Length: 194
View 1 (cartoon, rainbow, N blue to C red):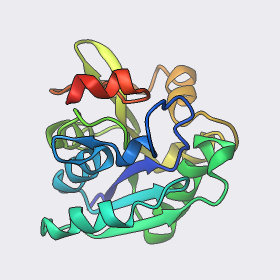
View 2: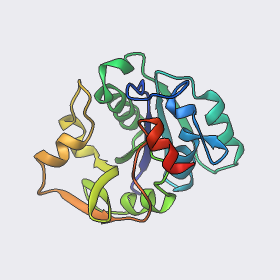
View 3: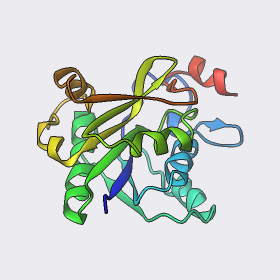
View 4: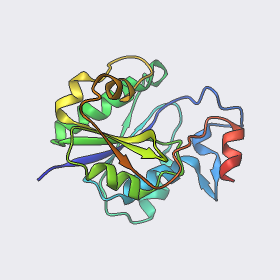
């Protein structure tokens, strides 16, 4: 049986954020921004939800997601080196996935509130080593990365799977998905969702 984990990257500092506090805690429809992505990933029904935190304490947000009684195991990993870029956060998740025996990870971002569980499920269901969601023909996370490619991911810097998608076009399966993949980086972005 193939085991797949949903990975939500939620460690960044939100350097472009021009609002009060951290963007992942900003309110969207009565809940913190990060709660939307976390709930969608948890509701997708994968074998485990891995959340990588860093710049901001998301324990209250995670407690809210857990309170929804979603039947999924949640593993929280803290990236002490979050300021060094996304590669380190993805590396933590990959190390965990390898240790517990997952065959693939499906990676998404905590600042994308419009990506629904259906998108996570659709990408996870693909029999491939590398797959990416497309929204109106545009590639955006979530992205599936199979075990055979984990050692090809960057170890440092602010890039996750994007480089791998460019380097291995022969392996990429595009998965049309519903939803809106726009991320929230600024107050202007946030206004779209409120």
